[in-house]
Length: 416
Image (cartoon, rainbow, N blue to C red; front, side, top):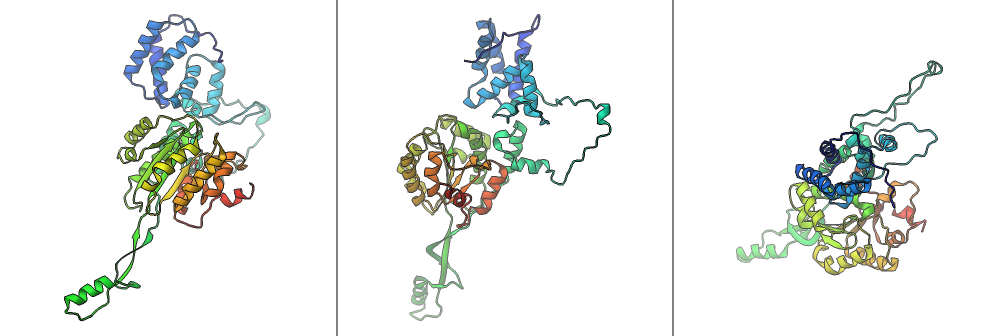
């Protein structure tokens, strides 16, 4: 149970103004808070009253938080705004990198960096003053490996991005395409130098000339474009990655000339949800908001095997035609029977022309397929690649049409 310190407010507090400023900080951190919610929060506090910090916390929480992913940001900003001096130092370290000594260090969790950015915008850490012993010390910095801000953003983990960095990454992904090569079908189209003889056109032309054959019509295989089928995990461990990747898929589904016949998108956590029609909307914010409202299991648990079974049973025959390419986006952390998961993965693999698995866990250098779900899924994919940054999605765009690409599959299969 979380322990709350007594709420200390200044003498003659202007509580309405404090709540208003608190709401502005939440809005900077990405929560959709308008004037109406601020008025509701002020009225709620005035009506309910409070004598302890938990009462005040949960009253504001009820007014400002309506999505699971907003809970972490709300909690971090509440602790910082309502007078927690130790947490102020911690949040400053989340926002601005510094050289640490022997104290314990950890990476910013989801939402912490955005919360710090909302309240500490423009703040700078204190710089230690130089002493006489430091005057003769020269520090040389090798700038040869310094990356530009855009290059750093390309390789930055989606989970560690601030609000502004997420917005910049989305703009970069909106310009990214996912081109695919056409498939040569058995049907033919007219071609003067085609390798196959088009007997039907030849005989029709002969009959029009009274039975005399002047030319032999030729044809070449007619190209057709495959479908792209996306299965995206939206469980708690994947929510931040899924939101940005779905932003990228919206751009792919609305970009003309990249070759896909149609883009079908599904989300899964504890249940399977078809969001294809929502991605067809031109406005990305409207599209993703509708998709989020459709999928009721955002940031919930994970039942990959059951969701793949639902897809194979209800949707596979409808959307897997035309040599579909399947993108499976998940960390593979399954809690159910791995044998059932392996069976559904095998069926999905047999139905797809290519099955590509994007796993954010590949960002770790020491990643190994030790989890039962991952080891059950890995043998049944054609390519196993990372999916945690803009650079990883750019690399996917380069290799998605290469039938020989296996990503990290071969290396990791050897460790099973």
